[in-house]
Length: 185
Image (cartoon, rainbow, N blue to C red):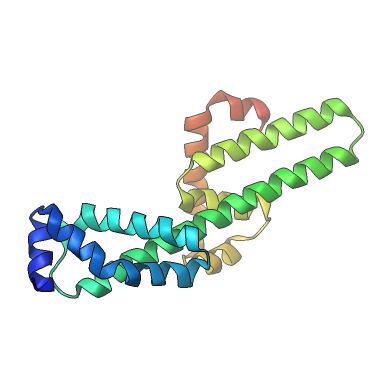
């Protein structure tokens, strides 16, 4: 069966046609993921996520270039993973810094309160959409200015300001009085 016929059948929900498309493109998708992630297991996982996304989105496919389309989905899945991993790595670094700061301060009550405050904020940031969490971390934890964040994120400084405002609002709504009590907002 020709590829365009498989795509057409998969678009109307024929599972066998979709399975055949997976067989055709699994090495292609894996190679994209592996080139970006440099890890076999991550590449396998994100290849599966790619095919899941293709399955969910195939009805919207515009019949132009399936190989490019599936390659773009694989690339975006990997880039999203990399971005999210960077934010999570930054959170881990902040927690490590908190531990180091606690070691330096000999007042145990201060250490406990300081650690709790950071953990409260980081939990809240982790629950935010990535675009808000990244801006909060860069501004408040990394002490970067609007211009630097804008360049790194590929957005305008005004957008940074808006995202910070919305992120603080989302934190306030999701965590409520806990943040006000701790003096963060």
